[in-house]
Picture 1 (cartoon, helix red, strand yellow):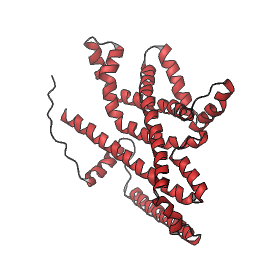
Picture 2 (cartoon, rainbow, N blue to C red):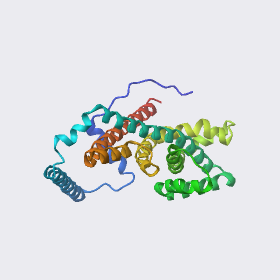
Picture 3 (tube, rainbow, N blue to C red):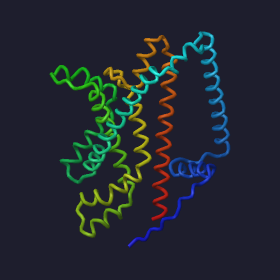
Picture 4 (cartoon, one colour):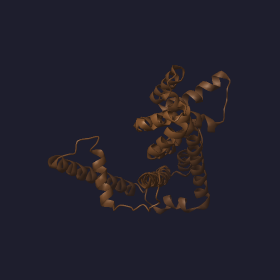
Length: 291
């Protein structure tokens, strides 16, 4: 019987955490030597300077062409405009949540099917995963948009966007789950089988819960991908945040300002999800240390 002690997880200083990144990467890549580190530092500095120069040039051009005048930005302080963008943001989050709620369990089932010993399960699952990972999401959305009406089947715009996103992301998530299962020690499966558990019972009760914990950061990162995929709603004229910004900018002749505001919103949303991914990773690492 394993005894666990609930000790508080001590957060390491930022410098220690940054140093551990290099230690983890050493398992995959050769650690750069002193000369390589100097070249990397020089390339990083030059790239940063070039990026800053491009930003400064863009701001200068905006100022020359009057794009920084307050009249063009005052629009985004008005409540009707903010409410309009908030509705678009809500639609984006709705697509992300629904897509994730459907793609996650489907990806887990596909991973289990591909790991199955039965050719009737693993071969169709492997074919599905490889094909859907190879097809661009935009092409799949166009196939649903243009192909379904020719068959007489019409579905709402929301599902014309959701279904292709779920199909492609479930294939990616299946590989994430499968990689996590493969990374677990083989002794976990052997021990479960030794005490009389069946294959599917072992996968459901022993292997898959541990694989989910191990893959949690990658799963949250894929949710960020879902948020970005929702911007393809313009193809089906679904009024998500980016398409709302396009409509707003064309109506008020503030295309640049609308896209800049929406870009800031997406950056904040992605940083928030990245922080959640980091928190999930620390939680699972801390739980593993307490066990």
